[in-house]
Length: 100
Image 1: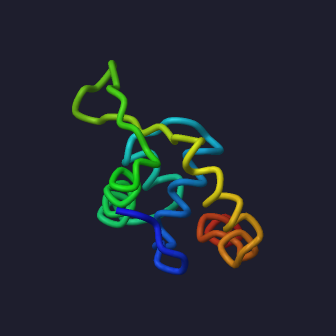
Image 2 (image 1 turned 90 degrees about the vertical axis):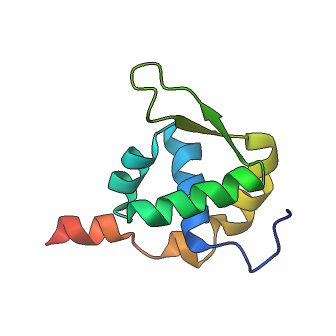
């Protein structure tokens, strides 16, 4: 499975960027950090695992909740492509919630 330009889900880019910036996290942490539905995060993680951009690592404190780590060699190009795009120019939903 390869990444097609314009076909990458926004949720996958957001999850990938968050993991690249903040380090390995479990899906629940990602969901809370991005204020995203757990189902959306799971879909994004499955897509990124299929593209081999993420690696699953065991969480030794809770084996039911694995952590995911970014393969920076593969993800670097995609992250640079979307770095100056609409995804980073708009405020996140989390920042909007804080202003209220």
